[in-house]
Length: 113
Length: 111
Image (cartoon, rainbow over all chains, first blue to last red; front, top):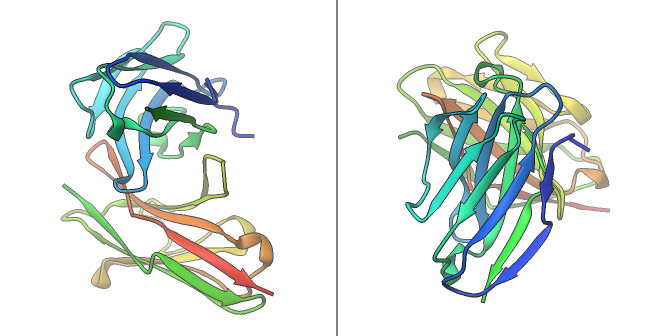
């Protein structure tokens, strides 16, 4: 158990819908990362937050957005969902961006039908 | 952008045999390098990391990796495979505030 929690574990929704994935980092970790893992794209870095502020952006679509709240939990919002958005979404946390050691949550499996 | 190449999407070894998983990266500056392991239906777990200290890095579960700047490689090795090592392994590079992951290598361990 990494100490990073993600909810929900599974999510099934229809095309065009919007969903919110939630992540709680390990106690004491200020930095949160979001990743998408799919069979065709592999593991892609989406976005990173540190202490509430966006720090780095990867291959995140404009239909996706994220934020980190004052209590350090983070949410990833996916809108106008397409079939190709079906994937595992991982959250990871670290003490700070310079610690480089990320701890991954168990993931949320999103299925878009 | 950085790229990480893992040679061999599937590797199969016998129990007790040497495990060698290959990773090459592209980077114009010395990067930070990592190996992660992912067991079925789980998140990734850090095996080891290189952050410009010793070039031979020892990690958990008996794994080690050697950073070779001249070859831009960071191969992962374990002298003797165990059945519990069967999993998917990812090499990753951290550069300019972003992590880049390889496509992964699935390790199968035969009894």
